[in-house]
Image (cartoon, rainbow, N blue to C red; front, side):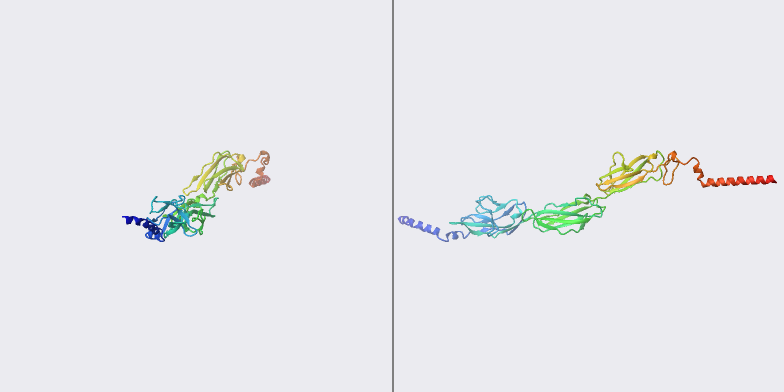
Length: 401
């Protein structure tokens, strides 16, 4: 027992020398393993990214960190000493499971992530083991597309351009198809531009269409296809939003002169216009008439509008030859005017080109002058005189006999 006691002071320094001898920590850590199994990952914007890393327990002493990319441009994603990094531990307090989570993934989170084991030394932490890296690609779904058209309406036969836009997507590969009703139409090449944040893109596609009169209920469809979509995104645009079809205006002319003091109706038919916003005004010899509340347009099965406006007029002699005009203003454009003339029958009959109004008595020829102007009457008077002369001549011969 005394020999053992005497040997203890000698054994302790020997153990201390062994523990501090070069290579002792490396020998103790020869069984250390770091596993980062994921080689590639793809995640959608807004989702949670899970990066897996496990290590064996024990030596060497030192922290485990997560770095994004490698070299001078690397970025620390998780460090136990700094909780403000993007990553957070999936299992708190574990000495072997160093899996981290990155919540609400953004496009700029794309890159290669490394799980790294450091070893404590007298001069600080030094790299001890590094995982093979996990390449993370972030996919961003395109926003719901929008379709815009001209700022002003256009008439049939004119061309109009329409633009479909979407943005915030990644990767940049995107396809767009256009349809008019269900028929595909050719568009201009799409335009890809950088998005509002890194690693995202915007898209713009334009198509030009020649408008037709029957396009009131036609639709354009923009269809967007992208790797992040299980079904295409679509947006429709109704061509009736920018189409304008001017009206046809017809005022029927009364077929015959109208009897004095009769009430007649002038009718204005406004047909085949779109949209239904229209104003109708009646004028008598250029002066606006008060016709009361205007009629409301009605829609036809084809989507056009029409209306009929009627004005009642008393056929007095003072209105003979008056011009009645139907003035139609559609969508604030130049007025379209239809006209008709009122002819009134004079008390003594009608003259050429309608009924001639009575002239004042002072403007008429002297009484009976119109009889002398008739060739028939002159011929009758000559025949009468000739017959009278023959009778007198016959009587004179008999008297001589």
